[in-house]
Every structure is written in C-alpha cells, then in structure tokens.
Image 1 (cartoon, one colour):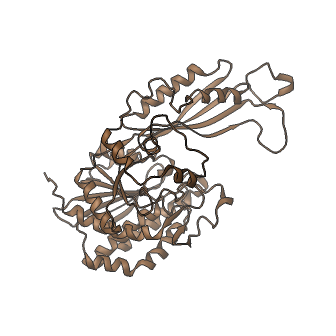
Image 2: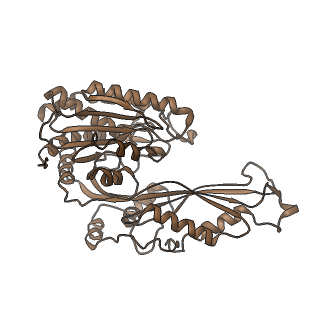
Image 3: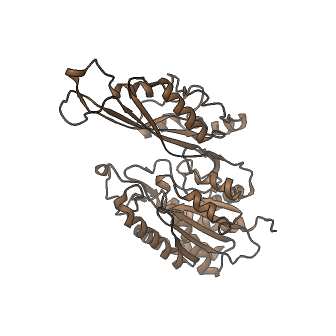
Length: 460
C-alpha cells in the first residue's frame, strides 16, 4: 500500500484541479433548462472513469437522466464492492447569498466552495482517485468494483429503483459503499450505521374560483391561507410531538446502550445552536438533540405560498394556498403507511368550507445496520488509517432512499463512508468541502478496498 499512498500524496494538487472541472458543470436535475448540463456531466463522468482505468464504462439510459456504469472485475475470488453516488446537484437559489459563483470552484481557508463540492461530486471523485492510484501503481485493484452513479438523486431518484430491479445480475456484489454523508464533526471521523427515511407531500387548499376583495367578501368565505395554517398548526403539540394518529406505532425505540454511547460523543448543544444561529434549540420533549436528529421522526413545513406577497398592500382573499411538508422517518416506519395516516388526518381536520388536495411527492424508507457487520468494521479501520484517528459510530438524520432499495432488492449491506462535515452547507448557499478531508478520504478509500479484500465471502 505504500506505493499507492505515495502516489496519492504526490498528485494532491492535480486532484483539486480536476475536481474544479467537475464542479464547473451545473448539473441541476430539478430544473428542466439544465437537462443538457446534467447529460454533459454524465458524459464527463464517463470520461473520468475511463481515464482512471475502469472498464465497461458507459451511459445507461433511463426515462430521466442517464445512469453512469463502470466496473473492474479482475480480482478473482475477492469481494465485490458496488459503489453508488450521484452526479446531479441542487439548485443554487438564493444566488445573492453566495460569496463566490456556485459553479466557479473557489478555495478559501483550505476549503473548496461550489455547488456539489460535498454533495456529492467531491465525495464521488475521491473514489475515482483512489481507484486510479491502485491501478496506476499496481495494475490491479485488491477488490472487484462496480460503480453506478445517477443523475436524479436530488429529485428523489425517481427511476433508480426500476433500474436496479432491471439490472440485478449486472449489479451483483457483496457490499454497497456510499460516500454521501458527513463525519460527526471536524476532526472526528465517523461511520454511519443508520439513516432516517422520508415522506414528502404538497397540500393544496382552494376556497373560491378566484381571488376576492376582502372588503366585499371578507366574512362570507373561509380564507385558504387561514385554513391551511389551521391544518398545519394541528400537526404537532407544544412539546414537539406529532399528532397524526398512529404515527409512532412502529417507531423503533433507542436502546439504552445507544443512548449511553451517544451521550459520550463530543457534542455541545450550546455551540451547536450558536453555529446554526438559533436563539434556542427545540424538539420533542424527553430526547436529546442528537436523539431527535438521528433517531426520532419529524414533521416540517418546507414551504408555503398563498395570496399577495409583494411590496405594498393588496386587500385580497386568495383563492388558493399551498404548502410543501415532509416527515423524516425512523426504523421501522413505512413511508406508504405514514402517507395514508397523514392523508386521513388532513381530511379529518380540514375545514369543510375549502377543497383540500394532498399529493405524494416522493419518499424513502429508513435504514439501519448493525455496526459489528464485518464490512462496517473494515470501513472503520480504513477511516482510521486515512485520518489517523479511530472513528465514532453514529446515525444520520438525512435520507438516502436507495440504501433500503439495495437491501431489499439486491440483499446487500451498505457502508456509509462519508467525509463531509455537518457545516458544509449541502443544499444551501456557499456549499463547500474541506480539502484536508477530501485528501484523507482518498487515502481512506484506497485503504478501504484493501481492507474489504481481506473479508472472506462465500461463493456458489
């Protein structure tokens, strides 16, 4: 391994220059006008994988954006890693809050700023470079690797499940590796063993066929803004507990061991609140902040629209109001069951004087594995070699729906091997990636392949 690590250290500056080229492509999957850019990014990814030495590299078309596939299967008898990531990125709004252009990667104080830096191009690219180092120095990898990279993760991976179902033989592996998650904290590497799921909805409320003058009609009809506010206000009690009937029935409670381990983690609630700019933290009564973020379900209002919002005054009763809401789910909650419970509850509490429509947008199941899994332990050893410090084992509050899909369809365990940081503004202005973590992640990835190669796997 020494020659591989020496190669990585020698090429450190080149990696950053190449990453800048990757980050320059505005592959925003949510905006139709950027569809050509998403495809251009997929083609750039194909070229990059060919350059590092991967084989059978190609685009595979889907009803949406294409999947990039590549493999290297020359390690006979060794385990096979299926590496998953995504090359699409979030929109950049509000643009005026960016300190530098979102698609002109800029380095400040050892961090690279650009949309996609941490989510997920930077973390995907570190594996490209780890693969390159093994192949350039040794002519082979210690493990077999298959790679799939999608262009629709930021819009709910709407075609990925069908792709996986249709290509099960081509995706055969022993473990999935995903680098799309943060470390616990700066200087505290971690391995994530649990994710929350997601259920996302749009609520539309209609009161009349058109907007009305509030003087002429005020008092005669229900205001949809008010009706929507009343519906949303009944979703949680004052202690932060969600009031949807049956919502908590399947929640997997925290074990005493987990709660004890999490209490020992270097987490300061006062510093956390200060970094967020929050006057005070709030959440479900009876749980710590880490427990609320990692292991308890949530209900959030993600956006609201209705009536007049411009400068000045306009005395209007809007005809319609809209809200987008989401629920983060935990093991063992099922998104479809939660969706039905939510829809039933909205119909029950909605005023009869308005029309209410609930649309399911997208969702994903929560996921959890045990951290004594040999692949998880191998990842822990690799992280320690890459960062010089033993990792902590934690859960993550976000959602990666495909993790549950890999488990259900392919029967594969997953290892979340992320090197981002919680404050790196994924999905927000001034997204960034610490270049020290990027470099350490390349080294750790190179060690991961070596560590996984030592795990015995049964072959038919």
